[in-house]
Image (cartoon, rainbow, N blue to C red; front, side):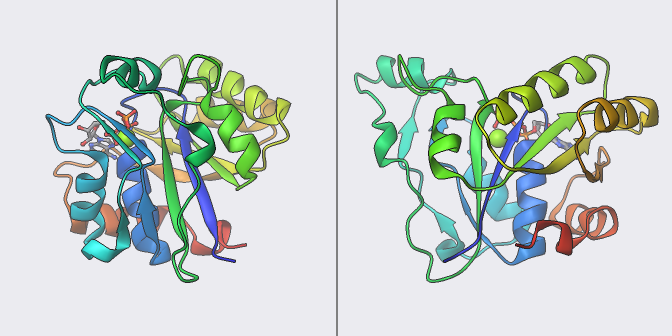
Length: 210
Ligand SMILES: Nc1ncnc2c1ncn2[C@@H]1O[C@H](COP(=O)(O)OP(=O)(O)OP(=O)(O)O)[C@@H](O)[C@H]1O
Ligand SMILES: [Mg+2]
């Protein structure tokens, strides 16, 4: 069966999509964003395709494309639909690995009753937790790890994003008993080349392999 890795994060807007693009390129994987909420700006799939330099066939179409840039449960309601969380399963990729990006963080609702966490627990795919390095990250990271583990979800490790804060990183890894996968620095400019170079320097492919 194809390898599947879930990319989640401690919050929205922390760089999950940029990290997912780097990981997709590193693994030669496909990318899938099951639920895209917000269509005005570049979507996550478009950004990953650009930054990982993927062919169209390597980007699996979103199951739900919702106009409103809001929590998926609300964006769906505003669109007059309800997300069928049981239909949120990755399609067959002919054996190619898939990087799957959730929306926001682990406790973000998909409908009135279902959190991302519930879907991750049903899937049982290993999860990478992305975390900011800036102030506040210890609390968010430890809470997210506790939530994932409370449901028996396999956490591959934590990937930091941002400028170096070695004490925060070490504290999270020690108290959270989690493997540090690496840190993606804040890149300027952020391009396919700068991202893929930084990713290859900061992360090891073997850490993500089954
Ligand atoms: N390593 C980085 N270097 C430079 N810019 C970055 C980096 N990571 C993220 N950004 C920028 O920060 C913004 C948010 O990043 P991104 O879209 O990856 O966040 P996200 O966690 O996926 O958000 P969402 O919850 O909406 O999916 C984007 O404008 C992105 O270009
Ligand atoms: Mg994203």
